[in-house]
Length: 571
Image 1: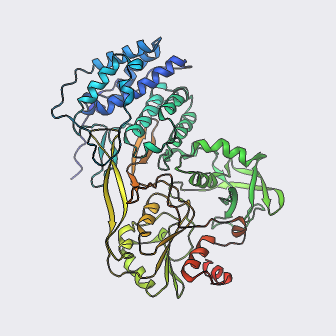
Image 2: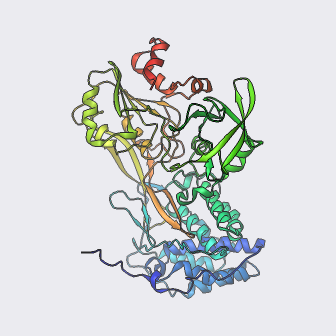
Image 3: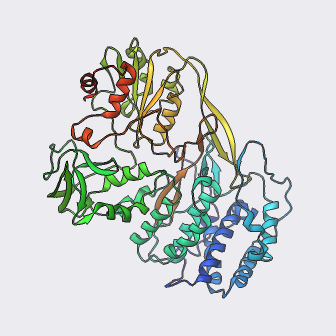
């Protein structure tokens, strides 16, 4: 038997704008931008609060296109507000709610930012209409969003991707801006830490989106917008080829920012230990005659990450990308400034999974009779007990999470590290009846299981530790005496909530807020190590793993000879 047919909705029945929004734009005036800001905010508010929209009776994207020409034609704010009022009136009257949704103040993390709907100076009579809609919102009724069972992160239903968008289409491009802006406004658990005026961001991007003339221009504007949310999960993972630097080829070297400089940290397995005269530990200073600092300044706004460490991680991975063929590279090697010619070659890189910084080879090994080592990039949760049994009798277990775990190990392994039930995380969750509201939810705990590991636990993290890796580190660090060694992680935690954007783009946000049990945050901050260690250029040049070396000292003691530590940390 096949799957039952998907129920049809208004999205299947309203076809008026299937061929596009139907209008063009070559410029925008200040009053048009101001009115489009109000439209974007009102459209988003109605999307999640008006009963005719939350019940699924309106194709809300197409309703935007129906009112857009009137807003663009309005000579002033009053005329635009009148057009919005007529648009809302055409939806029909809003019945008095029975029962009414209420905002529960208990365990409240933050409320929706809706003071603007009471601004009679800006909105006039429209303010009373919006207030009435808010006061009569329907309990738990949403068409465009639901919640993932058992987890609670938003699930964005009924968001068409319009993959056949023909550029330029100012209406669909503005729809993309409005959709993402309002998803952050009403459904991001991290809206409070965006770090800038989100309303000002809307105003800034209206002309940038509306006037983008090509698919590539539009995609870059989407990337720039998503980057302003400061959420490492918020990216258009389907279109990273449009993010600068563009090109189908790269110099076959691994680049990592060390001491705030782009350093050649390794070579792909298929390459020798030198490429085009480039060596381990070389600092890249120029590409094709352009200073690296200038390039980074130009590229950085298009990289969506939660913190600067993660931004430099991603820029480093793509830094040498460009057109196939020769590239002129300026480098600093020690005290010498050199110029070499290297060749860009076609490389396949999976951007979503961060590169790993763990040891090559087996998942589990004994570095010595006293130190066990486990990397999570190739673990199996079914083998968790076996790892602990093999580590029995050692002084310390080093768990390397400078990677993305291949299996969800939080409970399978974490329960073997604690000797009593121990909370390790707390969450915030959205409220379907009160969009823009997040409440404190459950506290997650580890419960002890056998076999129990009795030695010291040392957890390794750095900027490659992201999302599930960070959540895993949060759990493991509650083991008795456990410490985290390394540098700050990427600061993008929480289950993701994907959605489509016009043009066939695929984006997502962090869908739940993840905090420590004492309510201290992790988003943007990342997992802050107990012992901070970062690699050095000298260490990269010598092929050393300075974070692993410090972990060994934490287990074996500071008196351990440096030569012995370096030997044990070698691959």
